[in-house]
Amino acid sequence: MTQGPPPIATTKMMKKLMADHFLGLDRAAREGSPKVAWCTSVGPAELLHAMGFDVYFPENHGAMLGATRMSTETIPAANAVGYSPDICSYLTADVGAFLKGTTPLTRAYGIESVPKPDVLVFNTNQCRDVQDWFEWYGRHFKAPVIGVRTQRGVGEVEESMVSDIAAQIEALVPTLEEISGNKFDIDRLRETVGLSKQCTVMWRQVLEYGAKTPAQMTFFDHTIHMAPAVVLRGKPEAVAYYEALLTELKERDQAGLSAVPGEKYRLYWDGMPVWGRLRMLGDLMTELNTAIVASTYCNSWIFDAFDAADPFRSMARAYLELFIVRDEAFKEKYIQRHVELYGCQGIVFHDAKTCPNNSNNRYAMPQRFSEVHGVPTLVINGDLNDLRCFSDEQAKTNLEAFVEQIAEAAAA
Image 1 (cartoon, rainbow, N blue to C red):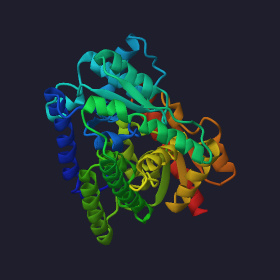
Image 2 (image 1 turned 135 degrees about the vertical axis):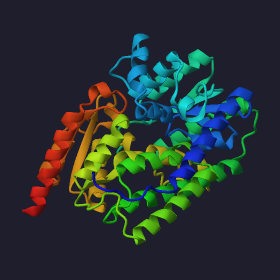
Image 3 (image 1 turned 180 degrees about the vertical axis):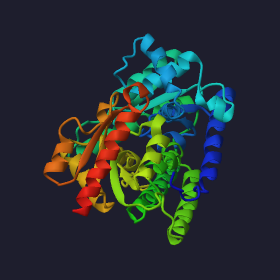
Image 4 (image 1 turned 90 degrees about the vertical axis):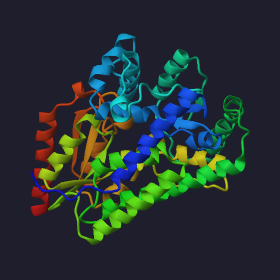
């Protein structure tokens, strides 16, 4: 096994932040104050923070179920009550875990269950599954489910679209006022949007360390360190975290450390992580002297449009400009731009069985990259949470052959 660099010290700070986040939610749910809002990962979290809610993100819990490989045992419980094995395995893993009365939060923090929601707020910019997911819990807890329905397959983001989404977000306010007992304050919203902007600027800077050679972090590190950008954006804790992480990355860069010792090759990852195999895949790429330096997934929490001076419209634009919302032509240009920026020699497309919206290989994009752009591509079959869809041996064989192909091309 190749000797890696020392662990990123700032990780300890993140673990403390995440513990405080979940313990705070647990306390709020038990005491009834502040009220708890569930939010999709790219939902209007800024508005919920501004209204005084503690905000819980079920997709984060779904990823934890995958990373701990508990999802393998919980998905069948959701299938048994009618949720297909072909739909989002975040949804089925999470609902199944609730039905079985289990959660990774118990082992991590001593928490018995996910926090009971006072309201559930979705944005369908990712997929329809998030709405169905929240409606299951809404029926169970008899809690209101409200949300934003976003256009799909967006090319250019038109002002009329922004106006529509901004109006939908603003229309949530009266219901949130009633549930929270707090009066809406535009200055408080401007403050949270401003904090999200600071968070997103620094998260982009963290990811762009991957453009350096050698890279200071890889995709597998990013999937861990993105947690504050997902669950704490709009709060000062996320800003403080990325300030500390950037300081450490600068020091590691000056010291000449490399995430992959002896880095020779650089790849781009498109699609969802395989949460239960992050360690296996990370170790494999290190053995192959290959760094996966950029990804569509981790870049999805960069929201350049946030503007504290125009909070509703800038939130609408930020959540409309999201990669997953866009059309095929935009996605192809986006990936090509990032392949060039990060100096990638190839692209790995993850075809996630239960996540068609985040699998971009199904309409010949890999072939276009190979034939039109001259970028080698590989498609690996798997899933974000359902490991029944993933073969360690097949993935290992395919990735080894792909890196060998790139090595031969580089030597030619």
